[in-house]
Amino acid sequence: MIETQARVVAAEAGYAVVEPRPHTPCGHCDPETGCRSLAIARAFSAGPGHFRVRNPLDAAVGDWVTVSMAEAGVRNSALLMYLLPLGGLLGGALALAPLGEFASVSGGLAGLALALPLVRRQAGRWQLSQDYQPVITGKLNPQHIKMERTCRSKN
Image (cartoon, rainbow, N blue to C red; front, side):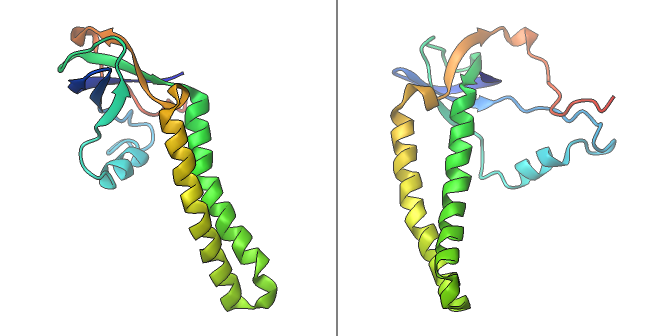
């Protein structure tokens, strides 16, 4: 299971909206600013990171909780989101490559366009599956919450 700590910002029947706890950089990547991947993630963030999760423990607004998701769900979702569109793009381009550059580019775009609805349909199916939904697995005492380090020591 992949786990993170989060604060509940809204609650409804069987679900909660959570905001993951920010992590601090460890300073091993860059002594001044810490982990660059964290800075990049924040730069491209589209607003507050609020997520809807299953709430079998009836956590209330303001509670600190542990949110978990199966590793297989994360892996399969990443494969679906990256490999299927890439496969459509490359497959379409390679299929029409003998007809010239323009046909190859057109085939790649057509393959990508055909892959995207497949991704949406499969993602919709997985959204209904309990295996692919994050879930609150525990409540935390706010006094014991510490800022975790996001990258490991190089020692």
